[in-house]
Length: 223
Ligand SMILES: Cc1cc2nc3c(=O)[nH]c(=O)nc-3n(C[C@H](O)[C@H](O)[C@H](O)COP(=O)(O)O)c2cc1C
Figure 1 (cartoon, rainbow, N blue to C red):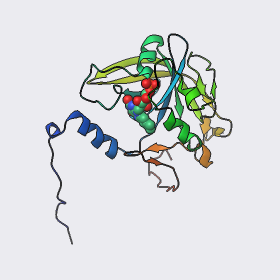
Figure 2 (figure 1 turned 30 degrees about the vertical axis):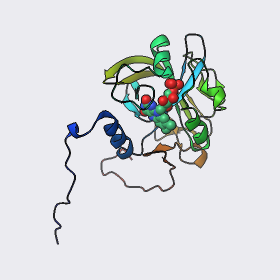
Figure 3 (figure 1 turned 90 degrees about the vertical axis):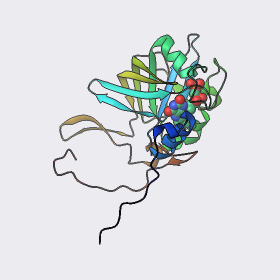
Figure 4 (figure 1 turned 180 degrees about the horizontal axis):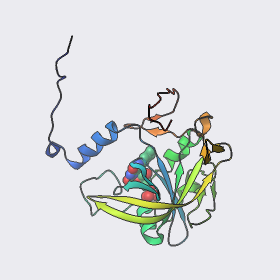
C-alpha cells in the first residue's frame, strides 16, 4: 500500500533570521567531524579551538576547510570581533588540524572556552602539545592524526570565513598506522580502539561516539 506524501513545514529561507538558521543547521547537519585547530599568535602564544563546520575539500592537493564564525552567539553582524584562530591564521598563514578522539573529548570542549587573546587553551584545558615539523603552530601530542596546513585561501561568507589550508605534513600515531594494504601505503585504522575513534558533533551539547558499524559493499568499489 502506498502512503501519502508526508506533510512538511515548508519554509522560505527568509523565514529565518541568521541566528535561527545557525541553530537549524547546527542541529540538523549531523554528525559532524571536528577539526581541532591549533594556531600561533604573532607573539608566539599557541591557541587551539574546535570547529565542526569542517571537512575535506580535496584529496589532491590535500585541502581541508572549516568555517570561523564571529566571536559569541551572533550570526547577524559581520563587524563583530574575530576569533583568535582567524586572527592567528591571517597573521602567520599556518594551522594544524588535529583530529578529536574520544579520550580527549573533555579537553576538546574545554578548549572552546573564550579566553582573552594571548592566553593559551593548551594550558587552560591541559592539552599536551608538541612542536610541528613544517609549521609554527604546535600540534596535539595524543591526536591520532595531525595535519599541518599552509593557508590556501579565506572565503568571506557573511559573518563567517571559510578557511582552506593545504596539508603539507602529517603525523600519525603508531597505534593507528597500518602501513601498506592492497598496494596502498600509509593506511590507517582509527576505529580499532575506542580511544582513537574521532567523536562527532551533534546538535546542542551532544556528541556521538562510534559504537555500531555496518558493512554495505558497493558493487563498483572501492570497498
Ligand atoms: C565541538 C565544537 C565545535 C565548534 N565548531 C565551531 C565552528 O565550526 N565554527 C566556529 O566559528 N566556532 C565553532 N565552535 C566555537 C569555537 O570553538 C569557540 O568560539 C572558540 O572559543 C574559538 O576560539 P578562539 O577564539 O581561540 O579561536 C565550536 C565549539 C565546539 C565545542
